[in-house]
Image 1: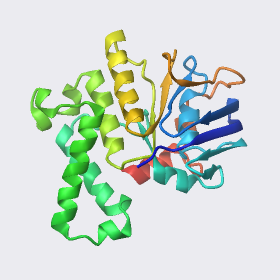
Image 2 (image 1 turned 135 degrees about the vertical axis):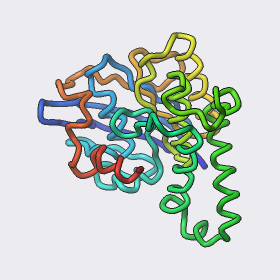
Image 3 (image 1 turned 90 degrees about the vertical axis):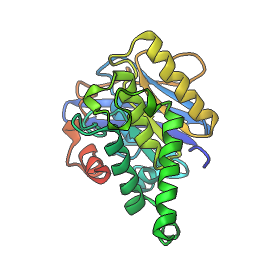
Length: 255
């Protein structure tokens, strides 16, 4: 599947404490690696959620794979997937890696596949689900054999970089055209961060458009800065819970 063409013109989002971000302009071709760059508290996460159809912009316009925001948020959600977003894609510490993967594959089969795919025989759908999971794990660079207990390893026993890779793999099960990955700076060493950036670049080389939140973007990215006109509520997506298209609504849809 081709990646999403992403554009924005004067995009802004205002919350209870002021502007989370404002004046965002962007034009990224399919298969681009887009870095949302800025300090913590500058609206990076809110912009990622807006461009993946999980938060409703207050002003300006954007398009993702031809679907316009804020008018067609549901259409954008169908072609995009967030990963590693606190309060939206949280992993359950007590569940195993295998349980997370099986749950996501089941949800994809029930709610994410097209009607044509849903009409396939059950055995065929199960085989397709296994192929999807294997492909997602490979793309995210997560080798189950390298984990302490393989697929039976609990999330609480994973290293931070393994958690990020698992979250990305779960998002990739749905074969999104746009993948949004939050906070690549949190609890990752320089070497681990470099590994994750290379993994994201490999996804773009395969065609997926990737949004990645970071403090400082590496070279070779389409870079958008969020530290101009940001308000105090910028990194508080949970305060938008319950609003149309907000993270809580989306988290319920993913669960």
